[in-house]
Image (cartoon, rainbow, N blue to C red):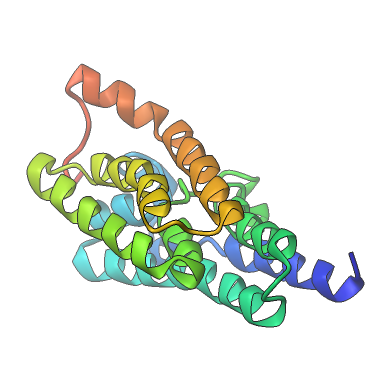
Length: 198
C-alpha cells in the first residue's frame, strides 16, 4: 500500500476522532460525559442539551464518516481494500477517539455517513427503519440497533458488492456490541427515552 493511501486512511481516523458531542457540550459549559448516559454521542447530547445541539452533533458525526469514505471511493474506485480501511478507520476514530482517551461515541451517526457514501439505497432504508423503531419504542438506542441489524439485510436485497456487504455485517456486530449497556438497561426498564432530560 502506497503512502498516499495510508494518508487517506490516517486522515479518516483523525477526522472520525473529532469528539463533536463533547465539544458542543463544552461550548455549553458542561462535560457531556458526566450527564445523562455519559456517552458523548447524538442521543445523549439531544437529551441533555436539546434538539438543535443533538441535530448538529448528528450532522457533524455523519459528515465525519461520509467525507473520507466518499473521497476513498472517488480516489480509489476499484480498490475495495483501501475504501473499507478508510471507512473502518473513520468509524473506529469515532468510537475510540484519541482526543478522549480512546472513549468516544457508539459509532451510529459516523457509520451512517460511511455507508451513505457507497451504499445510499440500503442506508436510506436503514434510516427509515431507525425512524420507525424510535417512533414505536421512544428509544434512540433501539432505532440505532434496528438500523444496524437491517442494513446488511438490505445490502443482500440490493446485491451490494460483497466487500461492502461484509463491512455492513461487521459494523452491525460492532454497533450491537457498543450498545450492550443499553440492552441491559432496556431489560432492566431503565433505558432513557429520547425526550428524557437529566
